Length: 67
Image (tube, rainbow, N blue to C red; front, side, top):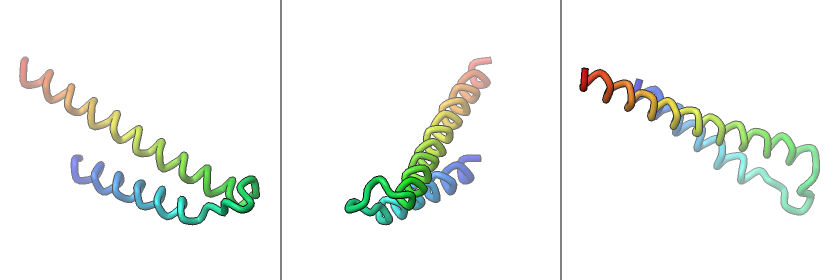
């Protein structure tokens, strides 16, 4: 599980970085930038969900150790 979340995290970071390079600052409110910004937000949401999953696994492991 740890390897899987690490791989997905790296992929999400790569997607975010790639899409940041695609932002056109001259025409910031164009349709192309809308798709890019949505993809950046989706990558950030993915990272947030993976962080929550890691915390939940730590809590579960801590709870199992003490029982």
